[in-house]
Amino acid sequence: MSESPATVRELVDRRVAAQPQAIYAINGQGTHSLRYDELATSGRQVAALLQSLGSRPGDIASLVMPNGLQTLRLLLGAMYGGWCVNPVNLLAQPGQMRYVLDHSDCKVVFVSPDREHSVRRMLAGLDRPVAVVVTEPDAETLPGAATLQPVCTPPPAPDALALLMYTSGTTGVPKGVMLTQANLTANALAISTEHGLRENDRVLAVLPLYHINAFAVTMLAPLAHGGSLAILPRFSASRFWAQAKERECTWINVVPTIISYLLEGAAPPRDDTQRIRFCRSASAALSPDHLRAFEDKFGISIIETMGLTETMAPAFSNPLDPAQRKVGSVGRASGCEARVVDTALAPVPDGQTGEIVIRGPNVMRRYYKNDEASRAALTLDGWLRTGDLGHRDRDGFFFVTGRIKELIIKGGENIAPREIDEALLRHPAVQDAAAVGIPDPHYGQEIMACVVLRPGRAADEEALRVFCLEQLGRYKTPKVIRFVTELPRGPSGKVQRLALLNLPG
Image 1 (cartoon, rainbow, N blue to C red):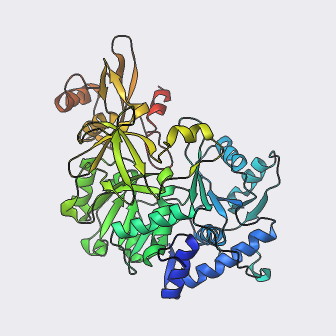
Image 2 (image 1 turned 90 degrees about the vertical axis):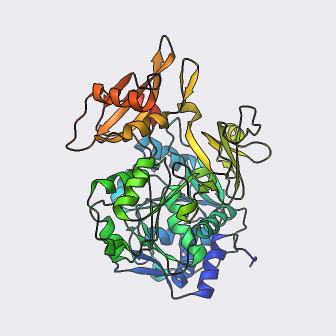
Image 3 (image 1 turned 135 degrees about the vertical axis):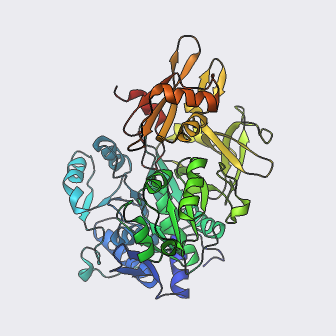
């Protein structure tokens, strides 16, 4: 075994050698758990199950399942044996899900009973046979476990494909991100080190495992430091704090949308949250006002981070020490190197806006069966073009101001939509807001903002426009303000700005 683990199997086996009886995962009710030694055993059982279905190491196995101990067992077991897993986004439209199942070339699909009918219908038209295995997400044993003889497959190589995860496809068909065993282990180790995680740390896992954040941070990172996770089927605002207390969690991993919902509810007694060392926020930009409000209300500090599916989740993180963090920044490069470049891909000075690019052991191999997209995303010397606009300050902290395709160009001046969002979010009646560029015959583009009001609060368009004039000045004040019940978001919680243009009304 190498000095530093480079595969999922090595991560698991090291934990088995060090703490075989330690709990790796516990379900939301606290009634069932999964130990580290059971992970290794189930890895050999999953290999036997997959081989009994005609699949071999290196093949792709898809999962159409919500969170649960069985879901963890299948994902980790398949990668332990050398298979590549493809967790399918449960929020995808049927056409998009069918595309993923077809494009991925999967040989086996594990599916929860409630989705069996729809998945079989999607697979019926494919030009290859696909085995379907139906199992409950919290089942205690694998299907056919009584007759399965565990199989010890050859150890997977560090550069073997371990995860094929598709982007949400908000600007076109989904792209399959190819991530290796080494990509996965590199970020599991980086996350654990960055947050100072230890064997007695337990994370409340409410984010779906078909999203890269949960896959990397709540599922894989505990394998690196020997901690554990409390796996829940979904987020519940009304039960969140009670669940964290009942399961004795020491940290929480959320997205800004969850923070917004929690801010709407009552704060639990401080005694109920005193075990929680920090809250980690990722997957979308967090309003500085929401960050401060959360810390004031719940007494839990927030570590803001940022990553992509293409970087196996986090590539940036604020420091563990609250005194060193910078509100509004996604932090410094974590486990990789990053810089800001101009349109010619040349580095720009600190403080100057450009595109953020990333290079390191966490960066994907390429996009699956999509050479054109791979060439556009990856430079010849290994830099990943993120498409995010931002700048780096003199201390090495990165600030993201928007997406290249979402940048508003009004009269030749570049305006970051996030600046408009954050101004509107400072209004006491506004719960959520997002700005986007709209065509204008004079300026080329004008600004439209879509706003969700807080329950029981009122504000009209004129009141918000006056507020924006004070906060932003006339040039950046939205020309159009629309009131909506919710903003369109992808599975990671990011606002789909371009979809704002197609909202009815």
